[in-house]
Length: 502
Image 1 (spheres, rainbow, N blue to C red):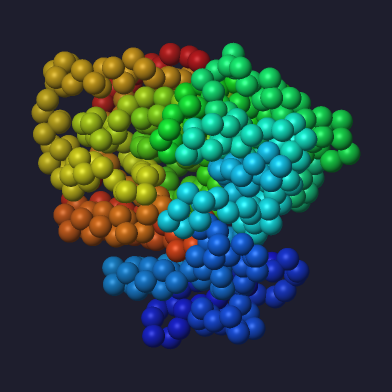
Image 2: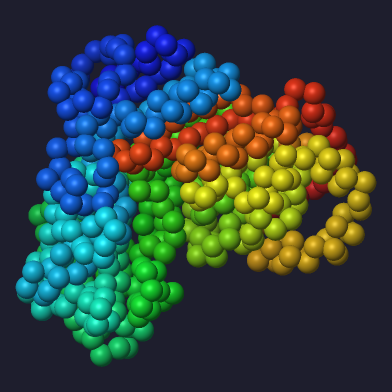
């Protein structure tokens, strides 16, 4: 059950929800805890790898990252009196991990680099990992030793196995919902030091895959392994994955249930490490989007956010814009599992949102942005800061001329997926009403937020924090902006347009 922690009287009260205990206890309200190992209510990491491993930087009070006090003060100055922080699951939360493989065939090391070095720290008992990731790592070590697989040597560029990605799916409909998380199965992606499956050392790759499947597959008492994939990489840089992937054993499709929809995630596509926290954020986000809205989802990845809104908010239209073409396949598979009663016009576009961003903003009621840690692209910030002028200027420009002058928009439309509703909708010429910003970079968010508010085009309506990475100083922010008081937000309507059926 959750404990509720509240900020001190010096600041307005803000709600901090802590999922720290595995036993049922009543909710209580107390002042936020200092980072103090002697505190009786301290949520400690208790990890033997702390300090040697670079993954975690905060050992005590995992429910209360130090940066959260700064966030409370920041939002208080902006008039947000009800900022909330969900600490989420504190241990065993990481369902996706990329780990380096070093050492020797008799003593393999699988873990993270020591801070400031390329020395790998073995982390067999990581407290952040889903327990089945640790179990799969131990099984992989056993296979490396038995089959004499050589870990990668960075200095020499030799060896077989460079990295491994472990991803846990907790979506098993054959189990009761309370049992699904602890029984999650692991998709193992082996990053092999060769150019393709035809290289000389791939015999050991297949033997290692068979070992994992034979000792952790469906015929074992404990079904641990979901599937085994191979990625081929020979580059000497720090990029983990190469461009070539191969499915070896197990299920090809990897599914997770997030934000009320079944989501397909290929091993090559981006996926949130903390799936439970991401689901909590999506449930909160959905409450702010008006029913029947027209939504554009920028930095969309496989379109999880946009598609969850299409289902939960019965959106009139959803456009997902993503620069990584690898996400397209996951989007297509996810769309196939959407409920049959979804009546949104849904599209996915392989495009860079920083190029002529107004082409995506115009005609939408709500824009959702989920940028990388560096924050929004400057060109997008500029358009959002001057959105009224952009709308006025564009309303006077014929659509045909706009397209002819922007060939990159035409290319994006060609390299897209369109699923149109059978319902007749009014042609959408809405003016942007709401900006929903999901941030994984606190410093960049503060800069973007200040820039948007300084334009007077936007005001901050709500803000919430989520503890996506307990044990670190990273927090996820969900911020809801509305058009500034006084900005023109009247909608224009036109005639009806018949959409093509699915």
